[in-house]
Length: 249
Image (cartoon, rainbow, N blue to C red; front, side):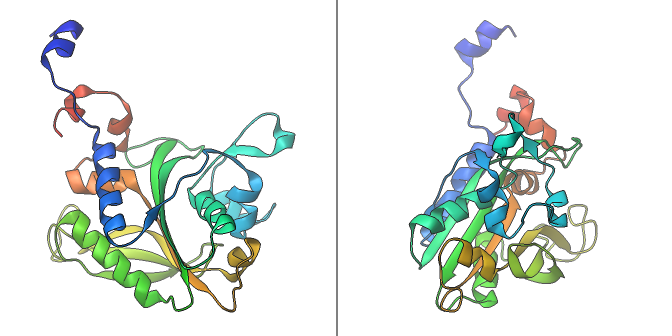
């Protein structure tokens, strides 16, 4: 088939990542969340400092950063959409319920599960009576609506500078219901990403009283959610422009 024939005969298709982002937005707005956005070219303050990751902190090694010239301006391509959380909290008083989906960049080698650019979903809730129970309910509700099957989650201790306590989240496998299959590598659980209670220093950096307000946050890869939902084994397929992938959706 020639290019002209594709243009004339084939109908347009939405990219699977576009479909997934639309579904995520639908689920969270239905739960009372606001969708927030922010710049992809960011300053060191919003990407690191305000998130309790000061200069020379070893945690910065967790994010392989694309720094922009001239280096003395300390600008970069954002490594996560946590910058949106900071900018939103600067301009809005609690209670806060937002998600921040968007493209992020990491200076790392690509393989079947890693890309130098990908899409991330972050969530932030701040209020006077916010707890880990609220985080657990939010995640279970989202996963159930997204994968179309009731799931349970479990937390494992972990470290992220902007939350305390920091947690890794596992979801019961939506395909085998925890019995063990190829998707969950026969463990019954799928590792989803990081979460936790917002660190008091993060709240203080944006002028929110950490003695009065508490919050939770989590961050997951949208590409990974799409891979799980649609059974795609290589994340690089999303960015190769192959119409054979897009035409399936």
